[in-house]
Image (cartoon, rainbow, N blue to C red):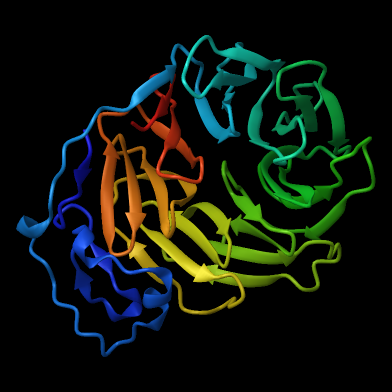
Length: 359
């Protein structure tokens, strides 16, 4: 079932102007129009009764009976995800055809896998295994063929820092959290391996960070400092951290950040925000609010839209200012969402062990 969200449930705000606008698709604007709006814009509130509804087919289960599925990615033919560890049961990196079918284990018996990334033209998956001593084991950054096979170590940290959130920014950068859960830092490595001298472009970033907490491009790394409710922008290749700046701050804890072309999008528990990547310290633009407990934030869909999962509401939404469209409801703890560059979405339902595809 696909529904437009009623205005009473999710409210959209026009930047800092606090002007309420409606949910209906008849008020869509593109990014250029968003950027040109100012406080003089005459936009009247729209009553919840004006929000349209549309029925559609239910989402499709493409894999089931998975163990704590979380981070998800896709390429032209397949969907990949992380099965998190559960007590004594190890985790794994998994794969399934986009059309569904028997899930395949790409990398088995992982102690605490966290995130996966890959390059479009490279037949490997890169992943972090955030396993912190004194429990033992190998923790760090690894790669494995997308079809499964031998796991190769790219980088490890000998000072007790486990690996967590991962960003592909030309190099591979990870938020490496310390043994006591604090003192995290961003560690960057080349994709070639073997283990090498690391580059720390922002040495005190992401204290207490949890999945997922960073993203970037070939110029910048954006990572979350949960202690300060802030996003930090560091320059790729600046191993001193001298050029790191506070990109944006938040009144709520920041849950997820995505670098999406010219814009950086992020979620708090109840809101979706964005800011131009080149304007650190600027005024963020509030895209949507009123969610229950946001988790994952997906990439761009067919234009200016992005996707979010609301774990608290058990729902998946498309956000395209100034509208929010319900893609799926009654989901079992949705954790992360990704798109294939169109309006087709893939997401994980962590609580029910499912991997889903939008109709």
